[in-house]
Length: 84
Image (tube, rainbow, N blue to C red; front, top):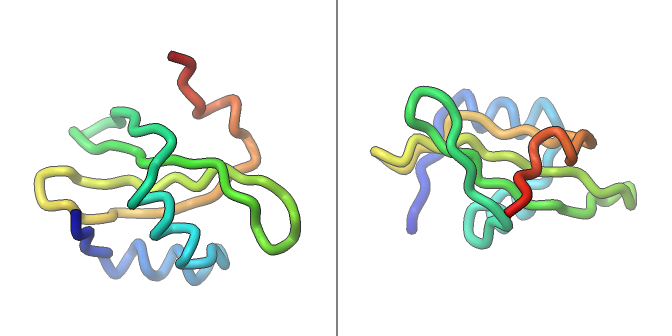
């Protein structure tokens, strides 16, 4: 699937210093896809960053047009992780 990044998403990736390769990996092979508000979904995966720490990368995607609306990384993995 091909995703389109909004200008806001690209700005946030840059501002938050999230390696684009980790974002691409998260979109192509998410560990989870969870529903969010407004009909969007969070593609999320635990990723090790260059600093050696593991963060949850979350890409919020509007599945109607496959646009990535925003991206962020959080250390609060338990807050967002959904147990099966």
